Image 1 (tube, rainbow, N blue to C red):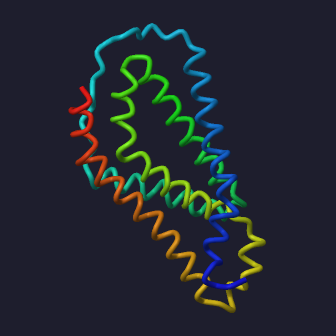
Image 2: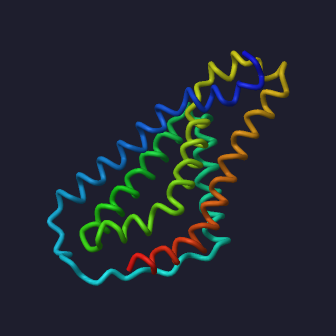
Length: 179
């Protein structure tokens, strides 16, 4: 396998599993929340202040690292992490839709969520990549393959960093506009 494409192939091989784990969590959480008879009605939605930038980026980095290191457990850690992330996202969106208009919920999630989700899916895909693809690439003989893998992981972490900037600066402004 060409070392330039080795890391991309790892992402590609892990991507379907990563998407399935994340979507399964979203669907399961949404079914659970919608199945509950919550007496929320149309109450006033309190918009929390964004968390401090450093804490948010540190949290995203730790979650991304756990997803990336999922390959050490044969992908189980990454699969469980993605499922849990999907579950919390689905539960949050379903609960928010019961008390807020869809435009407000979209304004609170979309500005940073797209970047964050892309970063987590990229790192989770690397964490789900099977060991066989790593062995076939002859990692010990091609140090550039490791470089490609590190670039892919770095790109995932860069997406999470940019998502943190957007979440602490742009998202609150978009929410205020959507009100």
